[in-house]
Length: 202
Ligand SMILES: CC(C)(COP(=O)(O)OP(=O)(O)OC[C@H]1O[C@@H](n2cnc3c(N)ncnc32)[C@H](O)[C@@H]1OP(=O)(O)O)[C@@H](O)C(=O)NCCC(=O)NCCS
Image 1 (cartoon, rainbow, N blue to C red):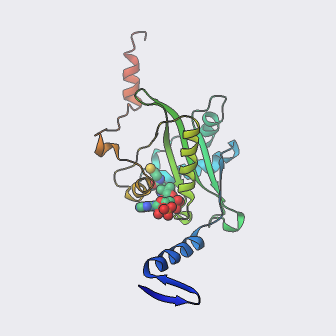
Image 2 (image 1 turned 90 degrees about the vertical axis):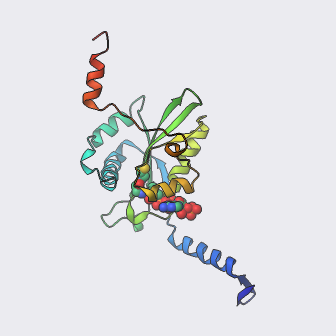
Image 3 (image 1 turned 30 degrees about the vertical axis):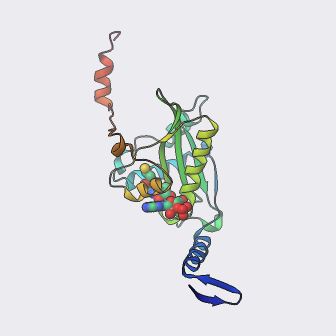
């Protein structure tokens, strides 16, 4: 049943809600660009890597430096790819940053499925969240994955990080831990050394 009439426009409750939502979204959305990171972005990316580690409640776990990012991300055979999100100067952050988000990914290979992509990090600074920047970063990487014949895009997310899980699920991700029962395992420094020493040629 129509319940609001404005001039020639006649809305029912559902369309009024969706029109209001579109207007709110238009107000909330902000101009931003997503582009490939350059070596000179590494300081900003490293700053946000530390912010993400703090968000993940592991602020002391970042052992890389911005020089490492330059070295491993911008060599002839880069270990990772990175995109950054930028806002115009008039929308800079409280601290004056215009680079407000990043995504890091690299190619992997699934023996079952073929060429694939791993999403290492995605981060948008708190004051710029909910404006479509995260989705733009993720969609761009999905497009790069498809252009490069990747069959899937994989990532890990902390168990308690339900807001980000919501973000991934709302964009179509599946939870392999629940569906297949996979666990994430790692050989850390000492364990890796110990194992390496068992290499017969050592
Ligand atoms: C996750 C993160 C990158 C998302 O970026 P963002 O810019 O806030 O997200 P967007 O504004 O692009 O949201 C995109 C869509 O996801 C949806 N979404 C976002 N959070 C959601 C949630 N908690 N539940 C359901 N949907 C959600 C939005 O509604 C939007 O959908 P729409 O396009 O249909 O309107 C950002 O919140 C972030 O940096 N979080 C902290 C760091 C982090 O946890 N990173 C991931 C580590 S694994």
